Length: 426
Image 1 (tube, rainbow, N blue to C red):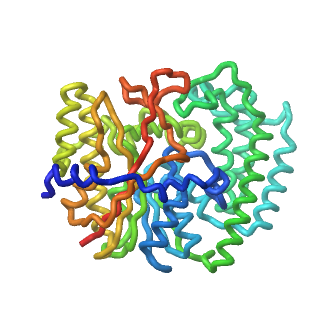
Image 2: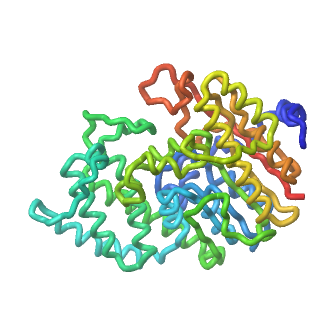
Image 3: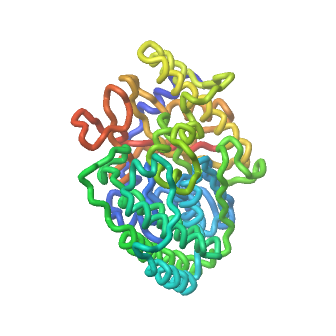
């Protein structure tokens, strides 16, 4: 097994590589084609993915993302003519990815939108609308907004073409926060009773018009490169059960969830509740990696660094120590699966940052590197980059370690830098 001090010394020597910050890229650059369809926490920028794909694959090589998120890896694989497979346990993420990776003929989609707008124009105070009586939806939405949203959702459901339907559902999902009383500048679920939500019809129309432009750019780019038919598939399943053949994958590019990944369930609750992906948020949290809700029979950390971190946490807060131990154990299982699907010589590129919980440094990058080397990977390159533009709930309360409210004056920057761990299967 790789010695703890070897990995720690390796990381001590790594300096920031400014070329990987992409600090010159604007929001427009990072949201080009379909990347701007939907907000998403911890979304890495497409320029990182495209550079990795260009450097470590050739056209036709299979690319996989075990933590697919909103589909950044799959979109970039598609425009570079690399077949790809994505996996995510979160159905909200899968919906986004399906919409973002599916090119639709622009004229067909525009015609569908015109027809949908015509039907939405029939809405009035006398229109019969079936609304949800879920208390959590009532918690977030004012009655008239809820009624309008229910009408929009109902009309989208009548669209026969599944790809077009997913496209409009994705747009609908992205307006929910703006149409609710969720505090606009906060990633943490906080109500703002003074907020005046935007009208649902106005928000939906603006959202879809922007997405139509993105789809047109995406479709034209794929046509120009001959990649429209390039295979791309996303599965709603566990990252430890990737639907890919053994020794078939050339490159894995992924940004795993952090140890508090169940917080992302809170961030996606509006869509999850509205589409009935879950009936309660507590149940939704249990699906994510590294939660204290999991009942692992055996914890296999496969890392001296991880054992040291868990031991330190255990002296301060046992529940947090259990969460971190479960997280590292489950990530080790994912890495075993990644080893299985990679070809010999295939690369994995993992984008991850370190953080702090209960005053203890959580060295995710060092732990992952040690686990991967123990499983049969060799370090190809480790890149340290600044994060000037990552869409991430980036502040935490230093005492609790939880994502902080926008109004929390004690909050601290959680992820000022991150690593790209590039390892090769030997």
